[in-house]
Amino acid sequence: MRLLLALVLALPVSGCVAASRSQDADLLELRSWMSGSFSSEAQHLSDPKAFLHIVLHMQPIWEGRSDGPWLYVEQAAAAKADRPYRQRVYRLRLAEGGGVWSDVYTLPGDPLGFAGAWRDPQRFDALDPAQLVAREGCSLLLHRQPDGAWQGSTEGRNCASELAGASHATSEARVEAMLLTSWDRGYAADGRQVWGSTAGAYRFVKQ
Image 1 (cartoon, helix red, strand yellow):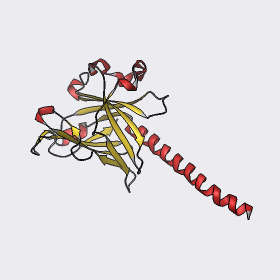
Image 2 (tube, helix red, strand yellow):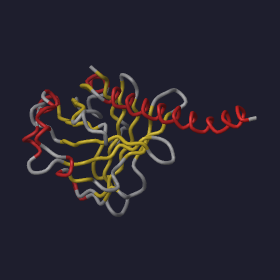
Image 3 (cartoon, rainbow, N blue to C red):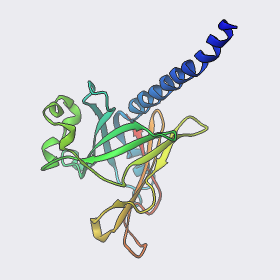
């Protein structure tokens, strides 16, 4: 009887441990799949009028911290790779209801001071995460799909944007082992799309 009771009491604990390990594995998998250098060159060559040749770099930073993973993200036109038009820091964290949040932060000061830092992530050691500026409402909630990929988007109109007269932005992403699909769009208050691709999502192939 005592043995049976001990086994029953142990079941929830072992179940929690297994769930925790699975969730940690999810974070590590996403970090691995999102890390690296990506290019939309193949898509650009197949439809040059609709899609530009964009290079995207994502590099893990602050790897010793327990509140991550954190990644530095740099995006640029291939012809101006040393002058990125978008620089962000992403933080991956588990969502309470399941899935993984990808939080978005901007860098302090002139972000071009960190251009090319994906080659040398130690440059971020002098920067504290508290110095970053969170883009409230711009986090993506990613969920595992039946085919194994991770897919998600921002929610509603909560991600503010003033670019090209926009009032808010939306982001959709799909992450696979060797492919990142991303579609960012900006909308005016009346619902008109004012920036971003109108032909569909960009397909970034890992190099």
